[in-house]
Image (tube, rainbow, N blue to C red; front, top):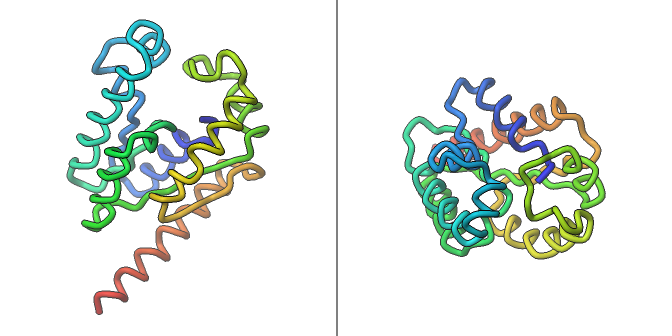
Length: 174
């Protein structure tokens, strides 16, 4: 939360001229409720179930779409397994945009759809970083620290990293 993943994903999808799939937006459209409403009315477990379903659908979409996965998508082992399967099949490259908790606390102060941060923004973000960091690292092919970078810089770094990875994969098969 707060790394700029939605904006970076949108700009990358535009650059590559591919479809953008934002898991939070897809869940909201499917349910006719906001993420905040789903958490309040149905609980986190229900949201995580929906997240898993949408992730599976996104990963099976043709055309190499850019998927902006919700921050908690790595929490469930089955989601990490789905991601690993897509990576192993060569149909996914996973990017982890991360930032220091204090940067995220400042950035997420403006958001309204982040129910997990309602009680203790800084404490929750610090704990999430500690808990989820190893999970993100376990699935990430590319890691970019966005703490002190502008969105444009992040997108440029990501494009370069993806181009390098594609060159490597292409050379691997020659």
